[in-house]
Amino acid sequence: MVFSTSTLQKGWDGNLGGKPQESGTYVWLAEGITFNGIVRQQKGYVVLIR
Image (cartoon, rainbow, N blue to C red; front, side):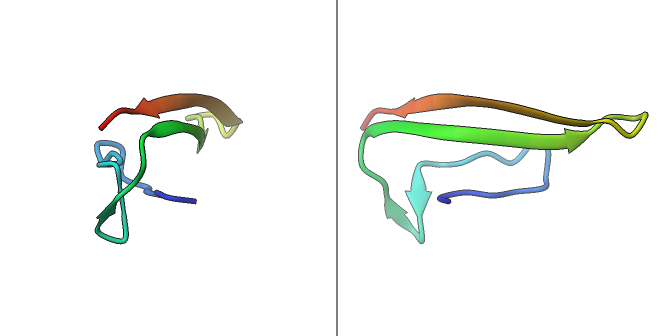
């Protein structure tokens, strides 16, 4: 895992431990609970280009 947050507006800046990560494709997974208590997951990928 290179990034985790529970804050909606916070995103990954391409660094891990203060060091820039290599260019490449990174997989993401987001999980949340809807207003009526249903657990939802979404996944995808992001391409980091330096």
